[in-house]
Length: 165
Image (cartoon, rainbow, N blue to C red):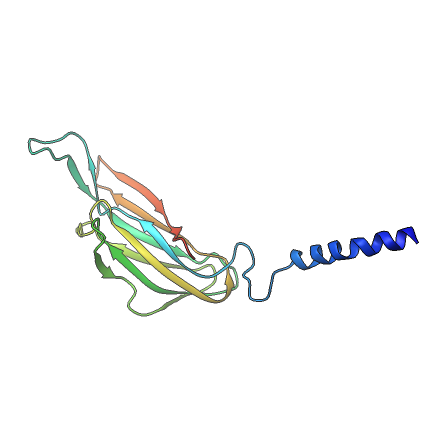
């Protein structure tokens, strides 16, 4: 009788553990998403060196290759927009004018030429992607470069999900 009473007390606890171990209906599995807004800091130029007579540092323009990599081996994602903002937070350009599908393990690239310094040193992209089913989020990076002979600069930046996603 004691073991029956003991197991009757354990039943509610066991039920709670079983119910809480799975995902509720409509939840996205950990590490997967139905979409996000990603913030990618980029630089159309960098300041460096000493200040000149006007109090300004040297300015070096860089090109930026934005790489949007679908890391899911079986599911496609859609890029809905890639909005480019300048240092003052003004929208400069929309780089994706119609949704682009990126297949499994594929990459979509955007390019900001070195001659375009409209973004400034505080430029950024807000990239919006979606998927019909829970998908591994993409990796989004900016590769910045100025590669003349004898003096080169290259560095990367990585996107982060915006809060609330």
